[in-house]
Amino acid sequence: MEKYESFIADPRWEKKLRSDLSKDRYEHTLRVASTAYDLAQIHGVDTRKASIAGYLHDCAKNYKDKKLLKYAKKYHIAISEAEEDNTDLLHAKVGAYIARDWFEVEDSDIFNAIAHHTTGRPSMSQLEKIIYISDYTEPGRKHRGRLDLIRQTAREDIDQTMLYILEDTLEYLSKKSKTKDPLTKEAYHYYNQVRKDF
Image (cartoon, rainbow, N blue to C red; front, side, top):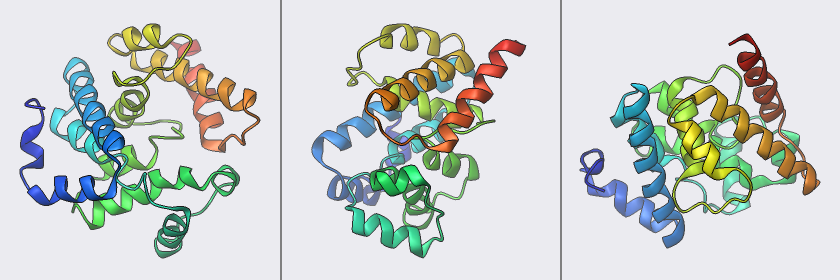
């Protein structure tokens, strides 16, 4: 916690998150913030911004479907077919606006990192990629498959890590017969091309 405790100097942040999130989800946010801090330090990204984005990335995660849809309407958020099938996916986009309006985070890169941490997208900034990867790899995650490889690669090659995670995500969604968000598929094709061009 000591690595990034300075950015939650305002006790209202912790109080709100603890009231809005389950205990397990709050602990997950701390681990994501810590992982994001470490990856940002390795890859030369602003560690404070990474910590804030990691800490707030799931600020709307425990909102019920009705509340997510209410905020989606309020903020004129376009809802994809995947989000219609699984309203929970909206927590990322809604969370970005909550971070902006309640936590007063005005940085557009942090906003985008929160908004796209579940689907990814093509041409993500380094901060966006770090939050996407940190959410997937934080120490509490127990994915099967190549998580150990992904964690190691995250310290060496951000774009290759993105490709691994996107591949695994699309494979998981196919096995579960879940609707794939177009942004996830677009992100996969984008990073696949990035690696071919490397």
